[in-house]
Length: 337
Image: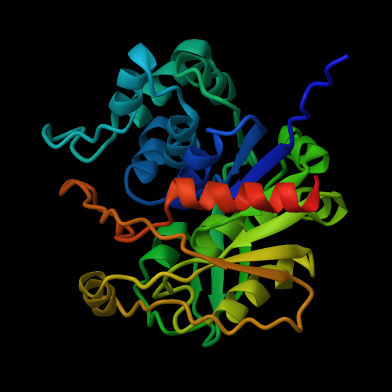
C-alpha cells in the first residue's frame, strides 16, 4: 500500500510585509499553512478603518490573504485588485480596494470574523489567515527615558528620539487570544517568526496571554527570520543578538533556529536607509547559544517602489519569497518533522 506523504503544519506569526513574503514562498509547497496576524495596527488606512468603520485593522490580514491566494484565472485578477491603492478621490485616496472590500463585507455578513473567512474563500487561499485576537486594543511602548507612546503608528514612526530603547511593550486593554490561533500553535510542527518589525509586528502577538503560553508549550520548532535592517524608533543600532534577546525576553528561550541573510545590500539602497538612520543588522551570533544559525542568500533583487499616496514608510529591500521558503523547508527536511 502506498503511504501518503505527511503534510507538516507550518504556522507563520507576525504581520506586515515580512509575513506576506514568507507566506508567498511557502504556499508553493504541499504543507498545512497558517498565518497568525497581529491586530493592533493604527497607522495609515488602518486608522481610518478603525475610526470610521469601527473595525479592527485589516491591512495585515489583507496582505496575508493575498499572499496565500490563487494567482491564476479570476482569482489572480482579484489578487491584484485587493492590492490596488486608490490614487484619486478625496475620500478614498490612499486606501486599498482590499481594505474597503473587507469593510463592506463585514457590514453585509454582520461580523468581521465572517468577512475574513468569506474573503479567504473568494480569493481561494492555500491555508488559513487567523487574527491573533478580536480585542480592540492599542500597543503601548515605554522607553528608557520614561517616554510612553500609546499607538502603534507613533512607535513605528516616532515623534520622539528614535534612538531611545524600548524597555516594555504591552497592549491596552489587554487582548484576549483567539482560540483558533492557540489551537494552530499547539498543533504546529514548525513556527516561523518574522521577518518583521520586532515591536510592532512580532511582539504584539507574543505578549497576548494564551499565545505566549502556547508558544512555550508547543512541541513545534520555532524559527526566527532575522531582519535585514535595523529600525529607527524600535531597534536602532540593534545587532542580531539584540533582536533575539528582545523577542526571548517575552517568549523565553524557545527559538530553535535563526535564519541570517549573507548577501550584500546594494549601496544605493543603503544610502536611502541611512537617511532614516537605519543600517544592516550586524551578525554577531556564535555557536555558543541554544539556537542554531543558518546563513544563506535570502535577499530579493527587487527594489520596492511604493505608491505616492501610501503615507507609511515601507521597506526598500525585502527577503526573497522563494529563497526564504526553500531554506525553511530545509529546516523541516533536516529535522524530519
